[in-house]
Amino acid sequence: MGFLTPWFLAGAVAIGLPVWLHLLKRHKTDPKLFPSLMFFEYRETSSVKHRRLDHILLFILRALLILLLALLFASPFIRRSSAAADGKKITVVAIDRSFSMRDGDRMARAKNEALQVLGNLKPGDQAEVIALAGQVQALTQVVNDPGELRAAVAALQPSDSRASYGELARYLRTLSEAQKMPLDVHLVSDLQKTAMPPGFADLRLDPGTNLIFHPVGGAEKNWTVENVVAPRRVYDPKRVKMQATIAGFGSPAAKRTVTLMLNGRELQSKMVDVPENGRTQVEFLGLEAPYGFSKGEVHIDSADGLAGDDRYYFSVERADPRKVLFIDDGRRPRAELYFRAALDASGDGGFQVETQRAEGAGAATLANYAFIVMNDLANVPQNL
Image (cartoon, rainbow, N blue to C red):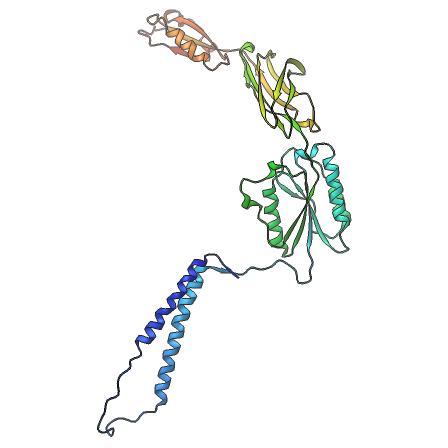
């Protein structure tokens, strides 16, 4: 048994209040001499005993009332053990299928470990196979069929997401509460740090859950193209600036060749120094893209067993700059210069400015422009 708010139990000391009230009502008087008792009415002494008994019961009820109030505010609860009376338990085989399990033969080794755990089960033992990635996937129910359990392990394939130990702990707590039986959880994983939740409390397991680790990873070095910042649209190929981030995990300092490709054609290639367990950035200037949509790619030379993260894909669209009509009456000679500088501040060259006087702008085809700026005109012609 436990209490959610045990500090309220201190209120039990208020039991002294009915004690004080009970003692306060007990009047003691000194006996006085009286010459004769002939005029007093005769009563049974038992009635006094009954009245004294009523006072004791009242005291007990008052004390119990205060004690029950203290217990009520302390919010008592009962800890129920999930252990079955006959000693039975459920074996849970949790297999990591995150992206890092694609490295080398990790997934094959994980399946072998899981099959060995299932091979140690006795006839009639209940077990369940689950897959761990960004979410927990139950591949079987809690069954005692070895064939179904082994088939679920054999069909497992790695995913493209990272594992979440917080989701695993939440699933195990739910399973323990539903089954009311102790759990033997065999976690087969490469135990990546990225699977840890933000708060350590998210890893809490029920007392009846026993966690056994089966590590299948190792100190493997890995380089990856972590991120690429590229424009969605290209107006002026010479003004395009792209930036790629190359990262190393568990890796020594090394040189990596970074290549920019577009539609399967190599455009640029650079050599960068990646620090030990660190990151570096490489910049590409210019992107000669054809009109329309193009598929881009930034990749590094593969130097580890996890080649899937050596490439980063993106897409761009080549289009003509949008025309802007700037109507000015010539009273402010530098107005056009300031306006062009403001548009060019974006750096993508998405606008092409044409300047006209108010007198000639009325004959222009205004539908050809994305927008029109009238720069504080003194007079607007009627045709405009």
